[in-house]
Length: 296
Image (cartoon, rainbow, N blue to C red; front, side):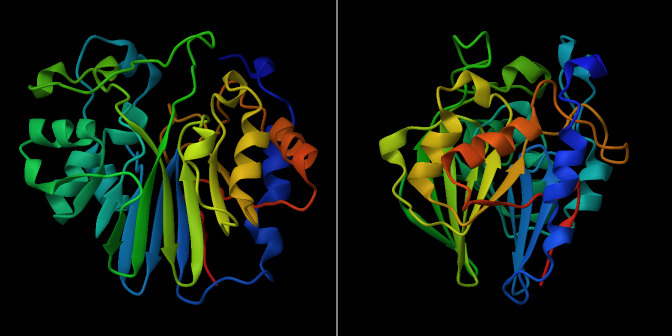
């Protein structure tokens, strides 16, 4: 990945939108939002910890290209996920699902998602930890009320198809190479807690009429691949009407967590801000650095 192929203003644009610059804005006491990199977040409140698409292992690019199984870096995962009440999964590509099993095994938490999530956990001997979700049903996890909304993955392969589409069906761990982490069903995830709402979109596509939530407080907006979805930013912002947009999935997730953050190839963070402003100047964009936590 040559630096010249990335938008030169990505880092400065992200710095300009960082939440540290807006500390005076209201935020519920006791609520924490931490970006874990890629599409991963931790939301904590009243002693409960909810994780969405946590991917801490961050396999190197070369590892994902080999015909060998990907292995979670369990020490890294344990360091950043010391406790969990539940994990929510939007789809099962490796950069969203590789670390599910070590988290579920060590913490004993439930993992909510598609049938592919259940198949993955069963392959690890953790079938009892899986919760196959029903769209629009509300799941109560401590202080959190969670709803899964049917969605789509962006067509990253030349704009024609979803990479590694279909259901994850591996029966043996040695079969779990990067391509074996097939997408499965895709969901947007609505979360209500502490008097505010979050909406997590881990892939930059949508089913317009499936989105029933309006006026969400914090839209956790995945950026990668949005250029392959027609008018993605305008369409989803007009459906959700969010108060604040929190970008994610713009980092180079082939770099380890302890390395300086890079930006994903052609993610064009600065261009994303222009796309938001083209819909309305009223939307606030607030970003987090890798592992940064928003608190009151």
